[in-house]
Image (tube, rainbow, N blue to C red):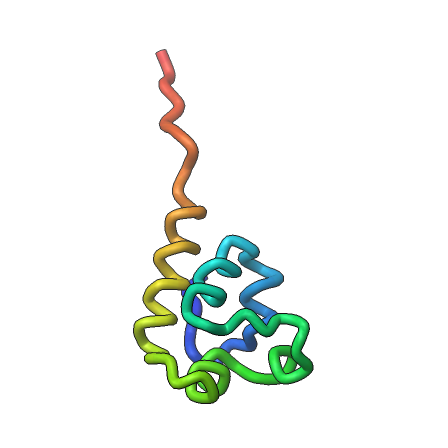
Length: 76
């Protein structure tokens, strides 16, 4: 799944907990905030003066890294 700027912040965090540090590093550590439940990533980024495209890229890097297989199974 690809994260897009129109997805809700809480939807992303609930589906991909590994993204929490990305949000926090970007300055969006307000997961207890009521707005986080209703805002999408673009709205939250704009409210905090964050480059939404860079944020979405970083979130997708984390998600794609966690989707990679742990190792290759060898069959002999």
